[in-house]
Image 1: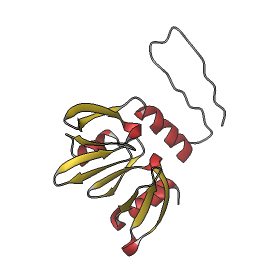
Image 2 (image 1 turned 45 degrees about the vertical axis):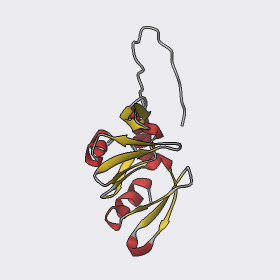
Image 3 (image 1 turned 90 degrees about the vertical axis):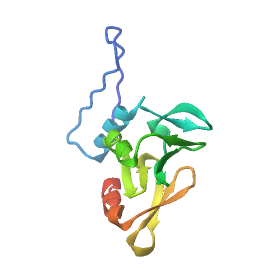
Length: 145
């Protein structure tokens, strides 16, 4: 892969162009990373309204009808539903792992089979989450297994 950067003061925003012999998973990941860059999600943390970069979210989980965003160092309660988050992050590396869990595949460092055809996903902060068997095959396919 070659990377070239060209500075053009006439531009008002960043423009990304990708040239490739074919669109493969690497190209899809590059496009997803470019699209999600700068995207922020609002929520509440310690009683304060705050935003977090979508790239910083390890996973989102619904507990007792509330949606929480988990980063490496904090938990943020989102006003969005899990389905709403999934729709807004559809082109990014986020993927449904269970009815209650949306995981950022960019933060998955490893996976292993778990009971009843489920998958255990190991995140880059060392945390483990379980993907249900309903979504395991799709996760494996998206990762390239």
